[in-house]
Length: 552
Image 1 (cartoon, rainbow, N blue to C red):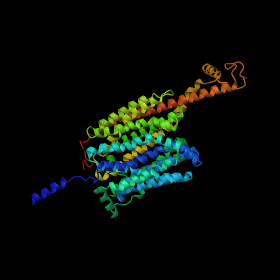
Image 2: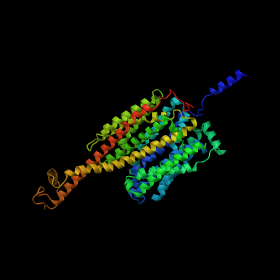
Image 3: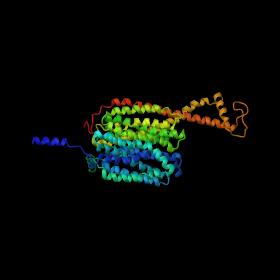
């Protein structure tokens, strides 16, 4: 009897872990399809804003709500997505998100006014926000730990490459077709994704168990937690997106939203911890932050999003506003880096299963720091080729960050916590991207003004150098009827030519000041990325081929 019992226990312990019926790579390609579409859509609309504003009779500032509404809805649903799968299942939740994204995309294309478009973009943001964390959790469960890095490589292609090609594709569509096709493009992809997901993707046993428990009333819906979450991250996204435009604390509405965000955040932390103490399922699993691996990974993912999205917006804006590039050509500056990422991601995926992920992250941040130092050499005479080279150099470092950071985040995590990990890491990247964009907009405005104030000291009417330059340039402008200034440094030059020369000099001064502001921003990003390298020494050495449930 004892021998039989021992054999029975041995058989139970040695039972193989759950694996999907379909080949894992087919599952990975299926779920990556919709995520690529969603991430692409978050950047493709940026270049279409002037066309959207013109088509709907709105101003450029009003049209920015098309972006803000999407980001706010996205930020709210990202951490809540893991919680929702507890009640309806991961596969069903993923398919609902795909369907909502597809329907709202079609409605965005049909919108006849800006308020309608903003409302449909909110629905689109809710649908899109649930796709990325669901996919990441599906990949973590579908692949064994030793192959998880390769699976995240495919996911990384969607998250990193899509923003790179988004502006180019968006510029091409808006220049050659109609801005509405940016949204219509999503519909057939959503239909294909729904068909494949229904046939291929399946929920693991522990997800089905959670759903059954919730249906029996074992897990209660945390409505208060969801409300506090919505206020916290909705207000945060609003502040980050509109802060510089409304002069931060100089605006009463921005101040109000900052106060609301802080109060809601503190209350949310207290409430979620209370839920844990009372034995209920909180909407945010804050216990994950007790693990150093996850807490540091969260910080590293935030910085990755900050650097990636900050520079993804910085470079096109620099070449369009200061170098005169078209939207399509500005996108082509980024696209070669996207192909670089496509080539590097599979390599990093293989290496992550063989090399300590901390070393890969260290190499990635070192390369990112060096590439930003190189990028700080931008100037008004820089060529298209050198800009492309700078971005490719940067992409070579970014490729070594996304996969290893995700790999470390899942170490020591229970299988039923995979959804929570994916939701929070995606939230870190999302908020990091919004913070990087807000940082760039704020610093660009303020550093440009600071450099202009410094330069303008030498552009006074009494400055001999300024007088000499205006006089020299006025001679090359043939404006007026020949009547000009008599005597003084501008003797003989027409009033029109003098004004033209002064305007030209001021415009050049503004371009130089803006260029120096871009250089300042890049240097700040360089310091920010370099400061992440020492954090790696605080991450415990991960066990070889650590499973998702290691340590439990």
